[in-house]
Length: 564
Image (cartoon, rainbow, N blue to C red; front, side, top):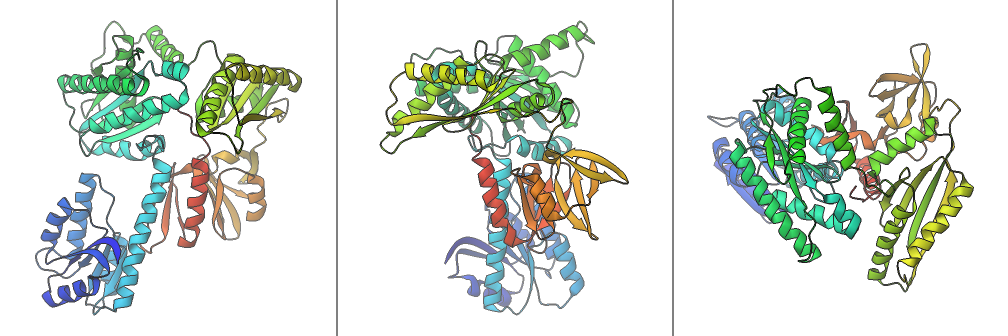
């Protein structure tokens, strides 16, 4: 017996009893109802794993029931339940329509027991696989909230269709926690705030972590300033309590949360505009008393209208808050990527350092954790303010040092190691490192990761990291990137070799996709997987390749865990 909940819908009592009899004993829970209206009432209270839905029913047929079910699921923010249509007719038109509108399968009566059970299991497994794949791409692993990609896929549609409030949330003085207590404690604070945000938000609100200590939310029930103030007060009280629990009653950093909000539709429905308005309201709070909320007003402030000086001051303040004065920069994965690309194009010289705080067999876990924390502090304080550091995984640190040679870097490495050793005894732990000079593509600063493709008869260069997918079409190799569609004279295998260690995976004999450019997944009408990319492109992948995608996504997830 599998731990699944199945609902059967059929107006024919004999057929309903027969289907229920086949399923009971195979699934942990089976419910039988005799109309579409009864199904909708049940679905409003319960979330089944699969629905068997008869097409020919009086008052509300299966197709209309399916349409209303999807509307209900969307309203409740649920993942669509797999639906298999049932029919006693041999009607290919109805079958085609059912599959076209999104059914998982189509089964004719009378049922073959083994075929029915196999098709139900396939539909449930495919739906769960899609849910897992989507979560890998769209969920922030540390907090369990939607990540930046998940927010981009979900919130613009809500802004366009529903009433509510788009909110930007920023933790006040959070960087002091990282500086004084270390990144591990910083991670704990972020997790605590995520719990507070969930507890403060009714079901149906959409919550996201978009980077570092920055969060975003779509609140459906925040309409007035009084409600926003009450939310801010509750969050700040709970945040102070959580930090004292984490770091002791002597904790005295004035950490808290500031909220900037934009009401929908009063401020419009364009997501980009609403994001900017909420960010402007957040800046207003950060410039004032902090630890509070502000709602953006579409009415311009006369004294600041068209004031470029005020806008320059606002942007400068935002950038300053992300710096750590007196130490090297910790810009995070995305930030260090842009720094690296900048150095590739314009720096005269640069050095890359990779450190690994390595545990030996007899080392205790607490000693290793302390050694990693000490090394993080030693590295940050030993490097220059112009250097950039990324903690790519626990115990592993990558540093970029502009305008230095390998000889200079060796001296710095010894300074880092000495600083680390002076911070305490680290039994059973050693530090290994690798030092490389940054190879510039040319004096002109060209990026060596660019690949030659054809646009008509003209050769153009596009960055491999910007490629969404590569596939064969009419014996031609096609390359899709955000800037358009191109061709190549290479074979797919030759192109695969050019991509090297980037995040590309082959999904069929004829196609390769960039996992980092995937926005979401969906289940197709044939049980295969549909992939949607950041720019709206889509493609299909057969089930047998899904495991490979899961493994590669897991590898990408393990690639970095810092909270900056």
